[in-house]
Amino acid sequence: MKVNEQVVLVTGSSRGLGAAIAKAFGKEGARVVVNYVKNADKASEVVESIGNDRAFAIQADVRDEYQVDTMLKKAKDHFGKPVTTVVNNALVHFTFDAVNKKTADTLTWEDYQEQFEGSVKAALHTVQAAKQDMADLNFGRVINIGTNLFQNPVVAYHEYNTSKAALLGFTRNMARELGAENITVNMVSGGLLEKTDASAATPDKVFQVIKENTPLQKVTTPEDVADAVLFFSSPWSRAVTGQNLVVDGGLVMD
Image (cartoon, rainbow, N blue to C red; front, side, top):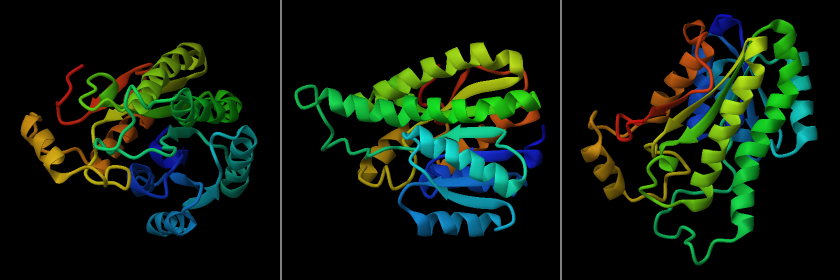
């Protein structure tokens, strides 16, 4: 299925990387569900930038199964066809602040649990809600957003990095099971992105160090990652599933 024929759900897409991904799909002519929890005004701005005829903002906490089910039903009613493509991007209560991050001494299990719910639990809900319609269409694309930090934790964001490592396990297991129904499940892992709300607390000197140590001599942007997400939704990736594509200018080579 061509990108412009798809209905795409991007979770957490009112700002940052999610907004860039939603807009990238919009530019390619897809129908886009702009999911948000609190930022209704920003979600509306994303919809307007895509076009009110091709984008639809829906409030839902992706950690809540009922809200996710309701969101996909609303999307199907709005566009007249089901969601074909899910991008699990939502970030729950986390800021990339290397100075004030939790340490081995201050971490609690609840910190881990919060990030596991934002990553794995949320992805489970969206996959389960979308799976039957994807199977009926014999087409589905799931793209999970990861991080290069779980492969090279240059900053030990313990709870966040560990949750994304678990999300890769989720990605590969779902890819194995859903492949028979032509549903691919992949991951795109960016580095520290310049600059989003989540990375706003990161000092400029950190971005400079990344730039100097990256083969492409640049810091990855949300738009760079969005392009890779488009690839995994496109016909060109039809034989690719269960993979993790690191998009960070070559900083981490897997």
